[in-house]
Length: 600
Image (cartoon, rainbow, N blue to C red; front, side, top):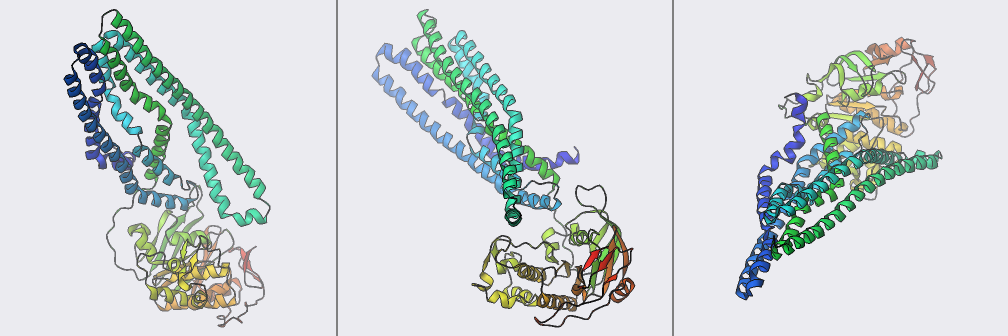
């Protein structure tokens, strides 16, 4: 068996293997239930053939009591069987929802697999189908031949009619599946695109309204929704048409069985009780098939959800258990790293080599598009390497549990995002057991403590998704506090001063120096040199390569930029003014009078 086949067993394991005892119990209950389902027909057969001709009331009473007891057992077992599958559905979701969350968040990093919340919806679809009445029809299906055999025992003509009818209804089910397959798949694809566009529109609402894009985007969204509705309507129309034909045909067959039975009774080939018994048994024989036809759309939806979920689970293997490694000191080593964005054929960066000792800082500079942010994402383990390695005290990110690795790192991305929760929860990274002292210490180090205390509820002030009640600079400083929380051994910051004023830049410089003093490694991606006052070494990226590496003074002197002193503390700090000088053409960028690097 190959690796792909082994991986594909994960969903099957959660669905079937882990539930074998209850499935076996359901099989047994289904057997008993389908035997008990003959009670009504046998009762009517005895009433018509024995009680009425003999006019025996005691016999009628005895038969009726027996039937009531059997129906009570039937009801009890049917109730238990239904409850079993409700719990199987819940168990499947509970077993997989953590994995589904992990794969959804992991695939979101790549930007090339826009699955959105589809995995969560697929898991819910599978669970709802399992918990419904659909699977029970398939457990009853194997007993259809039993009922047909009983009808054959009553008379072979009735058996032929019943068997032919069952075959016709089954063929109708296959035709319904064939007719609905293509439009159902197309409807799902269009719905998924519409859901992704809905989320995209929500995230970019400001641009939508401020740039007059609302009408155009609404038309695109409505077109996608309309396409999904068209395909869904086509699938539903086909399914309902075959379902209607199946139901009408079943009624015709049951009436036909009565008519045929009456004809055979007139010919004295069967008794009067056999007429009613054949009709009841025929109805029971066709019931699972009709239920399957009626629930065909749900089965198709669950099957497609199962296939998509299986594929995604194969794409993102479950985290394996790893041996606990010693706590790192903060030594960062990048060895011949080649970094390629998902979906790209050409590496963004290649042959990158550098080392950052604990307690030392490195600034990464370069023109726009040089790969600085890509380098930052690879350093914290967000991007896989095509070749080479990024090591923290000798260990690559995959040698530690992802959450453990993340707890060792402080990361301030260029695009700052807040989560729906309190200020304290956001700073503490939503830890199950947050340390209030560390939360306050991180906020003080980021110089945001006083501002937080002025909020309506202080650290308990709720922030909605995106942190819209905060300014861009305030969000950046809260995100800085989040990066500093827990004393990480590696601090990686991507344009950490892009939204900061002079006071914020002074706080940033102070925080960097404090982390260096604690022995952490600090790596700063920056366009504005004011973020690099406390940094000892610089790495220059250009054209996908490291074109220069050395001490800050050496690199700045080489490229012709005056090295300013550290910013004064306090709100009066003004940006350093400097004479615009062109950096080495190999580096490919320049410094403006305000100290902002721009592309040549």
